[in-house]
Image 1: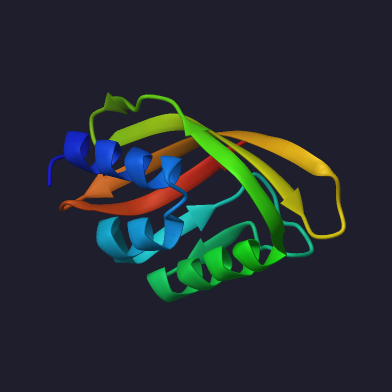
Image 2: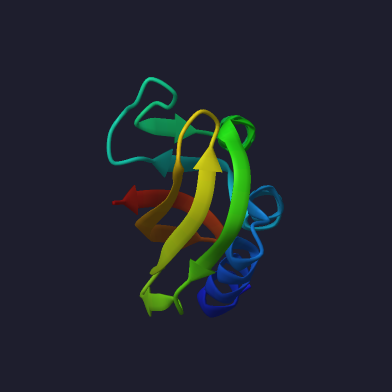
Length: 119
């Protein structure tokens, strides 16, 4: 897949909240995920596709209700692309809220090798 195809496909999966499917289809086995900072629930950096899938599973277990996600059109530069992702969710034990972040991805050999989030 080209970077344009990967970016379009990932944005589509994210709009449909199919994050696990996106990882399985588009990510390299040794992909890395970088958060803005560590939290009690998540490390700043997660390495390897199995660990990324576990991170996704853990986040989903914390969500009580989902009210939709929006994703901007991808912006592509070289071997990287980004888009904004906004999720409207109610986390367990918390009020409903919207999370908005800039998601930046790096691609190598037709697979996503890195994702980094900025809030």
